[in-house]
Amino acid sequence: MVGYFYRQVTGDSGRGAVLGDFKSQVCAVGPQVGHFLKVCKDSWYANLKVYYEFDANNRAEGWNA
Image (cartoon, rainbow, N blue to C red; front, side, top):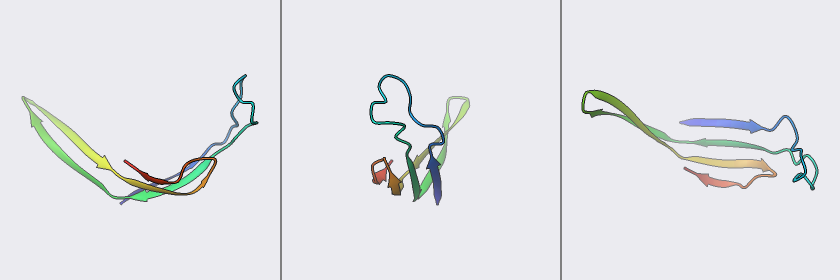
């Protein structure tokens, strides 16, 4: 299981920020699977993380991979 909490601490700025600072935040949890691969003489690592994002403010909610 993996997860994160994202909270934007400074507001958006610049000419494109016509809606104000538009700060966002979201929580996410989900599974992760990883595997080491032998490629020629090197070892590579690949993983897949799938999150369900919830409790969002100014962001989309739902599944994310």
